[in-house]
Image (cartoon, rainbow, N blue to C red; front, top):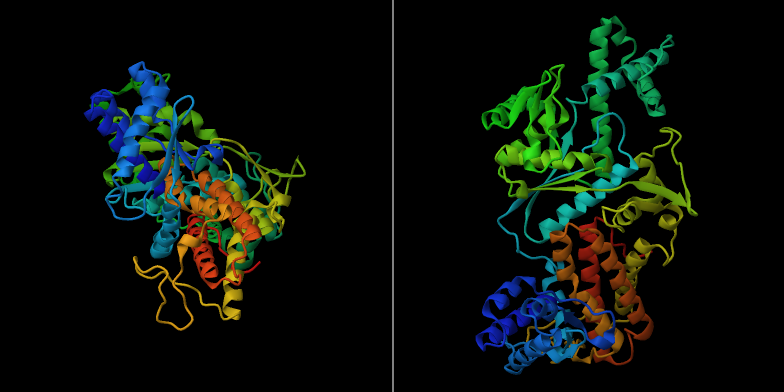
Length: 585
């Protein structure tokens, strides 16, 4: 991982500068964890750069360029001593640029060795064990079970699933969880059940009206008819109250089945389906309220039970139990998080919709009031999705009126495009989902552009096979360029990869480990779709300027190794995104 190697080189230079008295020891030690390595805005500035000297300059009161010069000298001294690993040298050139950046030109030999690394590590390239031994619970989607999953739920599903994949890629043991709101939304579920009951009666030819506060969606007409076709007039014999309860449960089960099916078809697997009702049945809600009272952070006022959340950063105290005796959302949410703490997770990540923004400080304050570590809980709010075509908002669904089921979107554009497009923007920004663009089979469509790079590589490899050109395999280190045992097969000489587009492609390939780690730690899955497009662009430019299967057998073997490395990176990337890697398009 070139960026990590450069970061370690900078850290070593900081230690040396402190040892020689050129920088204060305390500041040098503090800066160890703050070292960043970036790609500069222009290739003329080098392959990578660090702003480390800028931060140190502010703390020392010295000009940033002077600090950068000190670090550059120490880096050059370490580079001259040679790599401890015995591998190719890392840095070819170190330069200081205004106002205090340190730019690096990585040696061609080290870049060429990246191809070998990718081929050796294959499906493990980009993965790490940085967080091995730690476990995380990622709770996402968790839509009310009163209807099918909608487009906005699809954004949460794509985000949460890919975030879980990323965290798994850096060593976390990941649990994917879905919280079923089947208790505090009971009035909604009862209303939904009454709506389906009315549709059931209508399907039997009886007069019935959906309640004024009921649900009007066409999908409930279909559900009522299906129940009537399957069960006949079986439920007419039940007393009205009992029948209402039966339909509420029937509807809840049916909606959950539909939501599970939608997620499965969207490529999302959930490990735990946690029912809110279980918190009441197990007594955990009451235990949580009792704990807050015992700790002195719950009190009665105005015939209600309150939590002193204002003591922990919330703008005011919040109700736990209403005057009616019914628990507020906050009480069950706190019981739910306490349950997750009891399950022993090191980290809990909640992915919530935009309408829950104001609930975040309440829950975080309540967690601290229970004596639990609020740092172990991270709540991410994702923003809305707007379907557009030609710049105009689109209404796709006749069944649902002004909202669009996720199933309809996936049917319209396909799973791959839906997942990729949902992840093209940071979760905290609103997303315009361009339907026409998502369906295009052209380079304008980002997911097509990336998948086409993979398909083009597969086509190159198939062409090589059809022409009898051996697909190279990397020999053990130290015998590059020697003849292998298979007749006609030459061990690839990666040192031949010197064309600017080849080197640029390798630099992009080398960034995969960094991008995965940064996306996992920053909870930023959208980094991967951006990186995938950058990699595809670098490959397409290389393909246009460098003939892979040319007359020079040695160069062809080296370039085949490079395209094999790009294919491996694309597969790893698309695998984390949950997007297919087609071999032909």
